Length: 248
Image 1: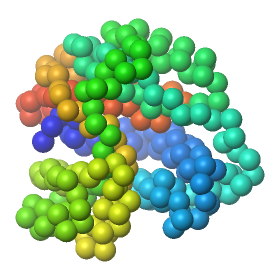
Image 2: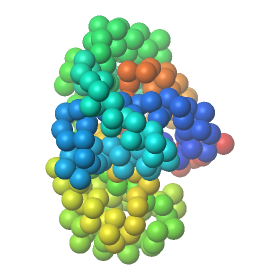
Image 3: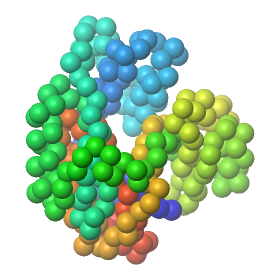
Image 4: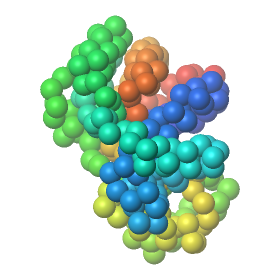
């Protein structure tokens, strides 16, 4: 499995998600509020909101938090937020995409640029690394949901494009515009997913050694610690040995 797919498993083993759960819920709430504000507050009538709610549920976000975030959209919250994508290079020339949601473009740009500089990277122009990624739908299931053949058949029937299966679980890829339909079909066949979201999937990767991965993780951690940053993606590839050392 590609390095970027192992990233979440290392974060989980290190307890990162537990440590940052409050911050994670805050980011998920913001996405829900914005999605509801931009469309219909009913998830069944708003594909983006439905995906945001599914992602929140996959992260064990309480139902009350989800409902409160939707209600905020009707109260005018989120009016001033805009979505911005930053692109740059991290340690060893790895390409990094930063997705942000902010009410102050200058503040966020300054913070992201400073974080790149402090961790051996540099912020580039929009489009400087985007050509190395594709916008895709990603649906994640745990390994115990079934064997690779079972999941592959379900994915094909659902209209997915590809499946990556390993001992860590199953990642099902779809066209970005098909994610809602594919996720719904998979849910009826395999049950609730661990995650359903739009992601930037690398089309080319940069091989990283242990030192490079440690530097990259520090950069990603610092970027994700920014309240304005929603998600960070990097096109790294690392050997099983390196990933095991990181997760140790």
